[in-house]
Length: 95
Image (cartoon, rainbow, N blue to C red):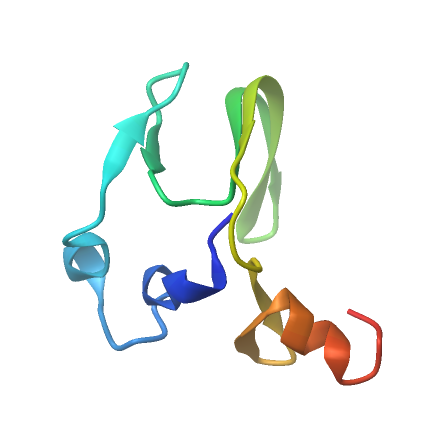
């Protein structure tokens, strides 16, 4: 989960491809998956099953580790744009 300040990684600041991740600090988690150092939360999972549905895949995973960091509000996609959770909930009290 990204902090609201990480809108760049969601592709909303005009950066594409590798440029979206340039200058970011990364580490690896238990399974070897790369993790953005300043992320708010991470579920480190191993893939158990992949279920094809139309042009998507539903991935069923076994959680191996969880990390949560204190920080700013999370970045959420709501009504066609990215917001902080507080702003999205503030308009009518529901998300």
